[in-house]
Image 1: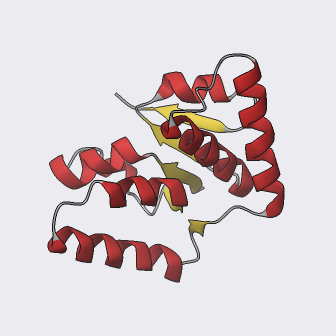
Image 2 (image 1 turned 90 degrees about the horizontal axis):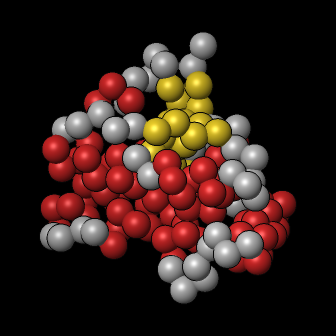
Length: 139
């Protein structure tokens, strides 16, 4: 049975730049979704027109397949509540946008019932105290 996954930004960077983690992109095992903060983080790292063209075509494929995750109203509320809870317990630095992006990716995973594939297990473990979602760490 195929599982739903969301691949975190660091994994995509390894995949695109060094050809690592190709086994994750296996359509017989995984249905891959794209959380919009991952797309935005990748946009911020682009260096030239060629990369822009490639990422645009890649993004468009996710849109065509209806696998670009845009938060529902319920998910937006969950993100805000999770940020408040994490900030109140000292587990979220509100001045660091990466933490907000990781909370948003976690809520997106919950929204579609996907598992996040990440190298950033520490931050996602912390976020699990506020949002119920699954993730899997890669080395």
